[in-house]
Image 1 (tube, rainbow, N blue to C red):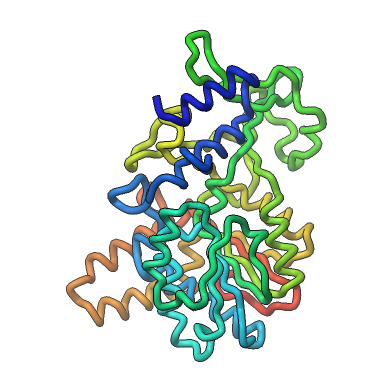
Image 2: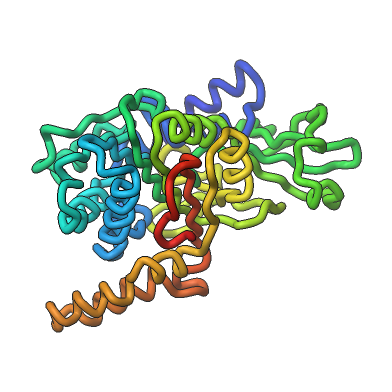
Length: 361
């Protein structure tokens, strides 16, 4: 039994079953035992590998995208480049290195990293040490101040706590985590249906069959980002795995050591994520007054930004790395179970005055 599992059982014994979203939040961000607070989960030695760790090309293209947005903003003397969940700092390091080709951008950039993990903050500090004089760390996006701003969120929204609701004959019931007769964690349904929930669903989902599962997240963060973008000028780029259209189904998964395990397995010691509903993100951002571009499959987005040309340049400069570069290119852009090209999507949120966004329009 993990330390967090013992604490979860204690809380449930006192207060009763907790919503799945609360369970997920505690597993990932509990200040003492949370998964992201206590470890570096990235890379071959961790639990999963993200796009920036697969190939430098990913971060480089994001850097050029960011610099292009800065140019459209009129090349201001200061721009806040904000990354949500910056991992080891790999994406930001690659992005800033590539963006040096755009005169003035790196000098103007102020780097704001939204990171809760003390361990990962140290990794980021090491990766970005040459930018130490212009970096700041924040616990929450709401702590970031300054304008204009460009926000990057790669594989961040999938780790935000998700609600699950199940349709039964008397309505939609929220999925909870409780204790079975043996005192072990188990999934259950709240006894009372959610009042008015059906009216919040997209029309295409309102005739869902019995037993259907609908996942949803709070709109609070995307609304906050969109409002800041509108007020301060700028744009946000969100890249994650999920669906372009809102749908039904259970996508919550737990991963440890690059293997899938049960979602109640070893709380606090495995990663928990669920697919991102890009249609819901877009609706919420548009309602907050922002212009929404996309979503678009990651493979198509990176291709439009020139990843094939970048791969050719890298191979010409380092022929001995050709196989490695081709493997990274395929992983980032290919469809199917071994590629991220179709599973991952890209959406951008911008203020209404900003021009066309590279790769998306």
